[in-house]
Structures are given as C-alpha cells and as structure tokens.
Length: 413
Image (cartoon, rainbow, N blue to C red):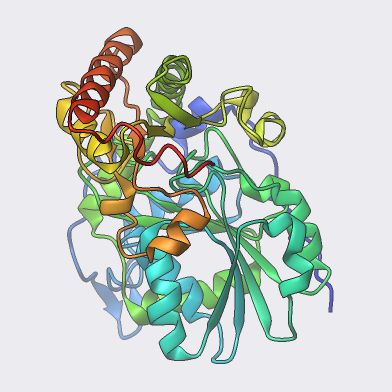
C-alpha cells in the first residue's frame, strides 16, 4: 500500500531567527517575566478527582518547559508536532520500539555508532531486523520486503559527511507504504528541514547543535502525522525516557541563538576544509560545502543557501598514529567526543565514536584508522585554520620520523 507524504504544517509567518527567539516562549501571565520560569514540580494540584487546575498532572506525561521546547522545535522544523526525549539515543529507541516484532528497517551504512549499536544489538533482540546499505538511493527497492516498515537516513552521515537525496528515498519508500526517518543532527533545523523534502520524521540529538553549549543530553523527534503523534507520545510517556524541566529550559535557551551559531560554524568549517584540502599532508577531505564533495549538488538542493554546516572529516597522511598525534597537538580544538557546541572539537572515529563497529564494516564506508573528525565551533576562523595547520604539519612530520609515513595512504576513498 502506498502512502502519501504527510501534509506539512502551515508555513510560519516569521523567519527562522524570529521563530528561534519567540516560538514556544510565552511571557509569564502572572509576573510578566519575558523568560519562562523553570517548572521543577513533578506533580500538579487538582481541584477535584481527575480535574487538574491547568494542563498538567504529572511531569513524566507533560511539563511546561518540555511543552515549550517541543513547540519551538516543531516551528523550526516546519512540523505539526515535536516530542522531546532524554537523549538522541532514547529518541531512536522510542521510534524503533513503535515497530512490531518481525519488522524490517533499511538504514544507510555510515550511521552514528550509537545508532548502529542499537540497530544491531537492541533492536535485533526484540525482533526487528536492520539491513545496511551504502548507496540507499540506488538500491533501496532491492532491499524492500513485505516486512519493511522504516527507512533510516543520516544526511550528512557521521563521520564521512555523505549526503542522501531525501526526496528520492522518500518517493521510493512511500510507494511501498514505508516511513522515512532522517537524522538531522549534523546540520540542525537552520541548515536543513527534512520534512520539506518528504521525510516522515526528523530526529536530532539536541545535545549537539540545537542546545549548542555542551551542557545538556537530550533528543527530539518532529513530524506532521496525527497517527505518529498518537503512537510516539504514548511511548514517550509509557517508557518514560523524558528530559528534565531544567534540561528542557536550557535547550530552549540554547536554541534561541541556533541560527547565529550555525552560520558561524559553517564559515569556520569552510575555511578549515579549504585549508586542509590544499595541504599535501591530507589524503582527502569530506565536507559538503566544498565543490569537490561528490554530493555537492544535493547540498545545494537540500541545505539553506548550500551551506556545508560545521562538521567535516579528513584523512591524514601517516596513518592512525598521525591521526592520534594531530588530536593531541591542537591548541584550540579540544580532543573530545560529541559535536555542535560553541567550542571546536576533534576526535578519531575509529577509536572513539565508531570503535564499536567492526573494522571491515567501518572501512567499507570510509571510516579508516587515519580519519579525523572535526566539529567547528564559533571561534575566529583564522585562529582555527592556524591551529589545524600547525598540528597537521607537526603530526605528519613526527609520523614520518617514526617510519609511518605511508600508513593508511593506500586505502583510497
């Protein structure tokens, strides 16, 4: 049975920056406070049995701060609904939990390590089978079975920054009544709105760009379908993997500057990517803002103004040793997992975020031991470029002295 793409929410009256500041941000009617108070109460008074004073009964089911945050995300993603969860992984779990045992999922191969872990170890345990494919637009129809219920896309992918044509995949999936989920964490709602391109659900690790200050762990899903809202809101309450009122308040505050941070991160990532691409010490650079990126045309179609976002990765000459040493030699970039904060971060996926994926599977999608992932923050671009180049030159030189100069250079990409 075919399904049609759910109708999108009405186009917002205001532009992104205005929505980021004002959506879901009512002034307090009692005090006139411009910024909403934090509602820490877990329970709410009832005037009679089953008759609460206002909209709220118990904070696992709903909370003013969580409701306001969800309203804001829905506005930014052009969605009718949004549901917040205690982490990005909890968001993934709730969506997969909505599938019956025996269901089949098709996923892009190069996904976040935590998503791969959930698909291969947790979903499998409750009877959901996942098929991974590196070229989902090309072969999606070959993998569809009668049991296929969901297609999972990351675009850009983590950490190789491959792009997927959302509309092409959604068209093929909807012909067979299959829902499409897009993980939009790497770009944020400012750069890309997957629902506008035919996706049924868009998910984020709010921990990253939406919150943007590396002080909240949280996730969110946004969509337009009334049926999905009924199913997923039930699971949100029944499973109980919800964010605290304080985290919801912090994430809402962080999102008010998302458009400013996303623009600056893109400027910085573009400068760093161009510098790396020009260096003889780099094998290849993965950044959708570069004209050399194989999916640059998709970026121009799906991303706001063709922006590349703040994430990139590159392969360094000198193998794994050089990659590790590079991360130790940066002075502004911090060696740490995660991404999307105001500060710039660097990591080696093969030994950190994607260490749990078998090496042959990692390398099949370009995650070699010499791959370095960079999250550009909002520092000055000139300082970031200088930091990257000094660490790069020193790491490769040290690696050459140790006789590792050729390591990793023959794997191709």
